[in-house]
Image (tube, rainbow, N blue to C red; front, side, top):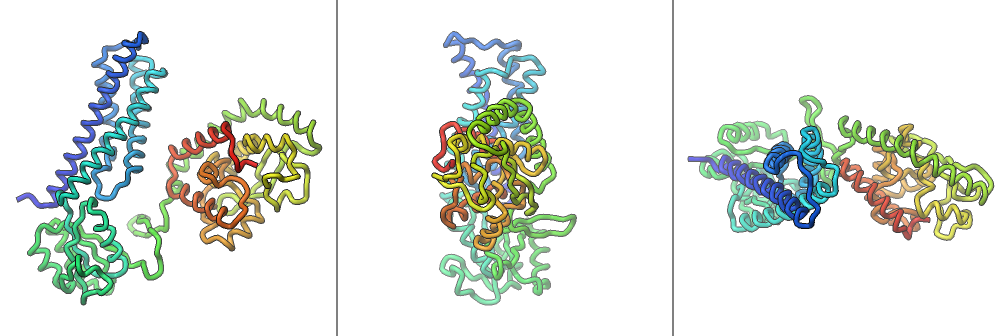
Length: 473
């Protein structure tokens, strides 16, 4: 008889296969629809190969980009934004791979409005399709199908919280049968999570109930003589064993598992920019983007700013101010000067009707022109294009004492623009809660960094500069 664990794996493989097949149908059908629509509108697309050949190449490209980790909607715990983010990743890779192969094979010109519109529509349609698929899957699981049965060993606060994580959402696909401990725990939901006995009785219970898929153990290490037989039984009887560390006595936030060689350790947050490949990608983009800007637009902007600045206010064109950067290292942040020379420049923030600003300086601040010399800081390696905004030394000294985890923002390079700035926390911090909101946004960015997120923040920054911001002063 096929075990429940194998059956679950088989079901998940079938789900992934169905999702990818649906994606392929949409990928091909949408391309044909765009091709047909272009001909109907008397704007035919010129192909050097037959339509079936192009569709075959595109199908192979899409399979290549989605076969490994391209589907996550079948997982028990997954959010809608994660599904859409995975679709974006797949379409992004598909754009690069298909664009390259279609160009090299000279099938047709991919640098066209036709192909850009197709890719945009593909991202939208596949996102909707996968979210609908996920909804159907949740309905199916709500009907008690495809359930993963779980037992808990130990009832520490960690396992109690784990119980609620597994059962509060009926669509999660988990069913907790009960728990083992030295005695019933009054803090456990004993009405719905049955006390099954002492930890020494786990093996006997599992042998009598072969439908159990998962076991989560949070017994202390001093009970190794009890834990090891449980591990051996699970490993030899197709039960997934998981060890739950007892951290709730001193740590109440999420932690992340890592490996250093053969040594496991837990970190307080995900740190995507600690990975060498991500560091390289971000730095390469910073260098390429800043060089391109400094060699093209910046000289023209500099000439205009220099002339107007000299005509409207005495003093230097640039303003250099010490700020805190990566690992709290101090550096000189470069800006176009937007204020009259004053003694409070290094200690007092700009306010809405700040008398130190000139009319020209106010224009530069509202359009972000004053920040453009910071591309020099990016090229020098002191800053990145996207990251937490660098603060004045005085502000770092003050706020680091008032706001918990304030210094976490210095784990990455500061940026010309950042997540907090495009989500409403730009400009003057009149109250402590304003700075607290900015710090939370900076930490969120550090934990969720991706190249796509950087591109989105750059887009939001440009859009806000064009439309104007009420906090830009």
